[in-house]
Image (cartoon, rainbow, N blue to C red; front, top):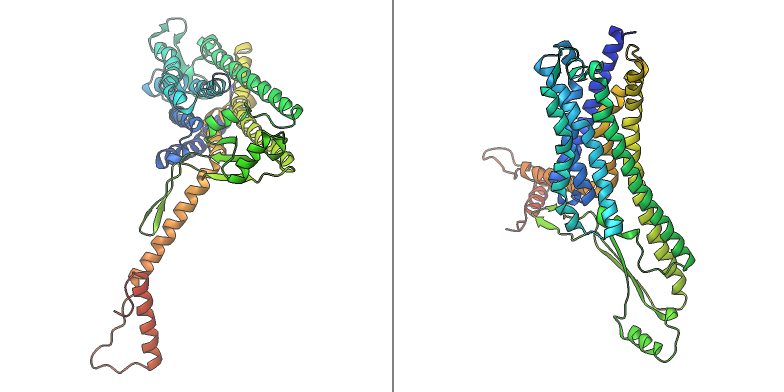
Length: 433
């Protein structure tokens, strides 16, 4: 059974539409990451590096069936197969790199600088490992099977005659990486669950809460708590503890939420976004016996928020992997078991999900960076408003009376004088001068 011309056209149109959507999402990632330091958190940096592979993979998928139509020995077909073999599995490797960052943060206490020093290794592995077979396939050719890169129904890739290589060098390694990624998230999730139970059993006063650490490292937010004795009243309370007063009942407690340093630079009437999406916020509770319960509730709320944020991002990455690779893997296993039977539904599902890798990454990127996007929008809005005001003031002309013309009415003179004073005021000039 072969695909009809209408089915091939439907698959090609789907590939190109989904590729275009992914390219738009990838452009959002690249543009905002380069535009503002606010977006350059550790987890976003890896998404940014992965975006370049998504761009190259979408260039291949947007070619669609044109590579096959130009001939399996043509440069276009060989180039398309090379890009797909190189960059499509790289996306799964980048997701694994993100999971490695979670692992190093949870279990080895890596900080942002240590994670950044690993990025060149991630780039080398995520793009270097898939490059080896992708490049080597150019030089393999036999009389019985022909070239490795050839028609793969959807586009030029590993041909049907070499279909066992699809599992051995593409889908097999990808699912190994997905399994390792799932194992890391499962292990980290188990630690979070155990810490939450400990926190609940201890009444919410655990000061070394593990779930906050990865949230701080990967999303750029830090939640810290400390005992504060900054006022004479608090110092007297602390001295009273030495005389047998219950210390827990009078302990002053402060919570600090930090999102990195924030710098605002004013130039004329416009402002520039600082490097952090969150401004520093400090709050401290007054020393009172009934404050212990609220202190515990606050601590537990911080833990729950950090836990939920981590869980949400991990689920998003893992769901994106499953949505991308499950339908296409089923299609390839089916084609391996029944090489002469082409299933339109499975092929169409593959043509839909595989080009959308960049789109899923952009959704996760926007979700993680939503506070930074709101700051960016606010800054752009203020710049546009300032530009409109400046243009309006510039277009206002002073009122002149031509010689020999009829004198204007007193009301018109008053209006003209008011307009002139308003114009000079906007320009920063003295209206009376």
